Structure formats: structure tokens, C-alpha cells
Length: 112
Length: 114
Image (spheres, each protein chain N blue to C red):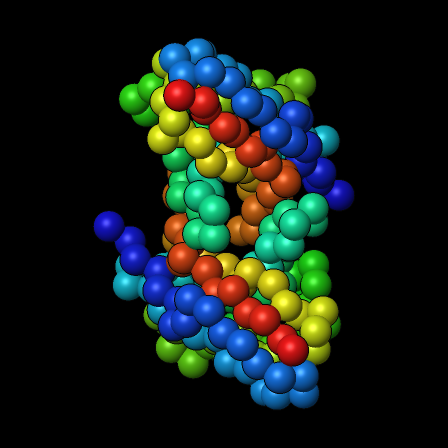
């Protein structure tokens, strides 16, 4: 059974810092991996999707990488801003399934 | 932009009531999902539907049922609400069979069962 882990559960950084969020998964037979952002009391917004054949995806200050063989993905946020404060979740879509398995998220706080 | 709309932002119900949570998407997505989210437990899949009238149990289907009579609408039903069903409920949709298709979520319904 696929398990997705995100460490740390919470992270606090000063504004302007570059930071990395980590995601690991136990079964490398994935179709894709998504990173989501969730603001308090709201739904999730998909930030980046990496297909199993890709190594990374970029959107603005965000860069997500995927290493299937080691079961790891990272989300890099450059020049962090207070508006980046949110919970970030990763999720993997298994081979042969339409369903996603989610990690529990990393709560990021960017201090002005 | 894809829009996934959940009918209620907040709901307060009594134990034993029958509760309907409605979700509508406007992008002709085949897949629709119901999750619940609880502190410390993360997102857990309740039910999944890949087509009209088709459904599949997720990880925690007990105490819930679903209905998908039209492609755009997916309803979650709590037959007899209990206090342990107090939670944030999230609906989502996606295209079927596409390796690069994102999952789109609604804003969530915070349900309190008293």
C-alpha cells in the first residue's frame, strides 16, 4: 500500500529565504505527483504536476522535482513571501488507479 | 478555469439527521471524489466515481453513500449523521485516463454534527 510522508510537519522561515519542502513515497510505480497549496479553512489548489517520466516542473518561484527511483519529491520556493504561508501537500497517483494518495502536509509560515 | 462548487460552506446538523452534501463541476470531468480532512489524519478518500451511476469505495466509506445521476453532480449522503462525522468535506474532480491532468477541489464544507 502506498504511503506518502512529508517532513517536517511545520516550518517557519523569515521572508526572502529560499526553502525546500520534502515528500517521500514508498511505491515508485506512480503515474504522477502533484503539489497542492491549502489556505486555512479552504480547499486545495494544485500548484504543480510532475509526470512519472519528468524530472521537474517550474511555475514562477516554484520548482518541483521528482526522483522516482528513490521515492522522493521536493518543492523549492524561491525568495519566500508572507503570502506563501499555507499548508503544502503532495499527492501521488498510483499506476492503474485514478485515485491519489496524499501526504499530511507541511505547514509553512513566512515571517515578515 | 475549472470550477468545483460545493453547495454549503458551513453546515450544522443534529445526530441522526440525514445529510446531503452536493458538489457540481463545470468541466465535463469523468472522475469525481469525496474526501474528508481531519487534523492529524490528513485527507482520506470516502468515495470515488468515474462515470454516471458508477462508484467505488474509498478508504473510509462506512456511514456514507453517494449518488451520481448526472456527470456534473456528485452527492455525498450521511444516512444518519453521528458526531464522529464532524469534519471538513472536500469534493474534487479530474479527467479520466490523463497522466498529466490535475485534480481540482471545491472550497470545502465544514460539517458540525451536534
